[in-house]
Image (cartoon, rainbow over all chains, first blue to last red; front, side):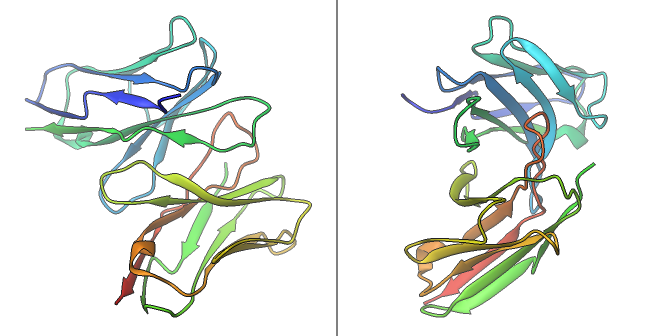
Length: 114
Length: 111
């Protein structure tokens, strides 16, 4: 068990470009979450998957954001036409139904939009 | 939706002193109350949690107390050490469909 893995760890892009982040959760975890965190703030909920089904999506998530978990294992978060306000740390977390309830986080993907 | 607050937002203590962080929440149906610690450049990590049928839980130097009637729970750290310096988040859970985190408390332990 290598924990939750996120790639890339850092991404610098120009405004208007598309970016994609990948999250590999702990293998037996069926629930997966994406959060956004800016400096000095708590993790802000973006979306949640149970297996391959996206069951919850924050109303703060604009149409430029899309997330998938095609086979119920890894997940991707894509941001289209990036804006400077998208600059943040994007965190992925997973947990297993019937477990303790603990969320296991990856180390995040930091996005800088120039 | 769940409204989560933490107090204080920043806390500075001398090494060896105690630190207390309070989390208030709005959803009376919350039934799981965890505290996470986030060190610089890392994702949050669970340090202690409590369920709604228990009033207090202790693990070495850290403890969590729960007051469901008043809808708040607190993190207590005794004999603080420099490595306790971090940002602490509460994340009371009602439903695992949407886990909301508090705004965080930045703890500094001064050697």
